Image (cartoon, rainbow, N blue to C red; front, side):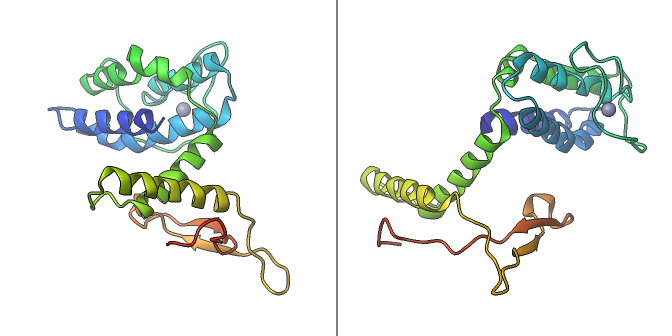
Length: 201
Ligand SMILES: [Zn+2]
């Protein structure tokens, strides 16, 4: 799954370095967001996922209606000026080649609903904690660290939101690094981790 998400971003990033294609840089984040939205909003409906996904090629050319029977118009509200691409221009064609490649379309149809992706992401973070990529571990050590990751994840991944003494739900403001701290997001404060299933940390 991650391969699909990161693969498109990387391909667009690389393509934006081609002569005359710098404008693609401005659509990398949008394409990635769009993919998450397609995964999150379509259930198991592969056809709908594909129709939604392909609509981005109209959207980037400032065309927001007339996409397809299943997904006739963009779901966003009124939208301001963007760096629209002209249909048929070089960057448009390059992006089209990436967005509608047969390999990618096959994967898009099989995207899981978002919650699965979210938990996989959380699990990857846990693995990174117990087995940092910067350190080399031999097979047995790696295996044990994977076991620890799985135990920790199973015990703590479905935690309740923390409450104050007065019983109010706790929240915090987060500045995601991926957005270089420029965007704030409100996140739930979770109850503390527990370590009941193992003792080494
Ligand atoms: Zn649109």
